[in-house]
Length: 447
Image (cartoon, rainbow, N blue to C red):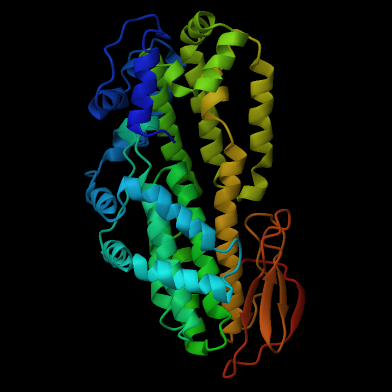
């Protein structure tokens, strides 16, 4: 995702290539970009079908400005900048990348030595980050008025703070204190939840990534030799809270659609080329010609946007079904685009910019849920509860594979295609005896 200043540089370079053949003043500030959130082109179009789509969006409170109905508090962003200044982030992420495990939460003695050094070096930053994330009103609101130019560099700061919390937990585990490691895990899950709750596919995806890292820490706590039944109950409670407050999948796509609306306004305003990379612009220049491309896009802009909005309505509607039942929708979208490629009514902006990786985005959200449900199920059984008759994996539509022995609970088949590790939780003394199970469970999701 481009920051405002990256997009500004591109706009200044190509603003003379107006897609709609009209001279526009240069973009100088974020306020100039925010003007397009009023949707000046869409609100004045003579296309009746497009006007009907706009009326639906207004009724649903789903335009860029309507998604900003609450004050956009930027306090958290400024504090993140103070804790993790932009000139620190690249080096900070690099240091953490070198020690963060690809999967699981185990460290060699040599790596633990490095972890201890990093934790000590950045202790003050971590403590400031903890204070911020712990506040009741901690939020990371997406500025829908800026569309593609909204600054997302704060996600780098969150990643650094998040992993510092994880390394802090690693140190506590190494010291034999898994119960104390629950608190940094709680903060990691809170940050993940705040990110995922925003109406933005970018923020939702970042929340999924951070929650995956939190589950690595949870794994380290659950499997620690000194973990007690009390700790396992705390872990179960944390995941239950995550699942109870899980945001609707549709929210991410509603925010993505608002960004799309803003993007079409930029195109109408003459900033077509600024929305693509230099390499993409060069490719279009060589294959089509910039003037010809600009003319074709301008002549078809209403039909392009209509196709996009109708498609996104289908995508959002499909969120009423689980991910594994949405395949037909994604295939139909691709078929529709294939039929239009090469025609005068080809939706260039929708196809080349806005409808990329819809299925992959849906999959990321579903995998996030599947991992949480797998660990919640394993903890549910390990805490002495009888296994439910079944639980369906929200990613695959198949049953999780559950194996309960005297010593542990294994919940597998989380993501067989990608080899995501199973959720494994020890069964500790003091738990209620649960019958052994070694088969896929069938039926309804665990309550």
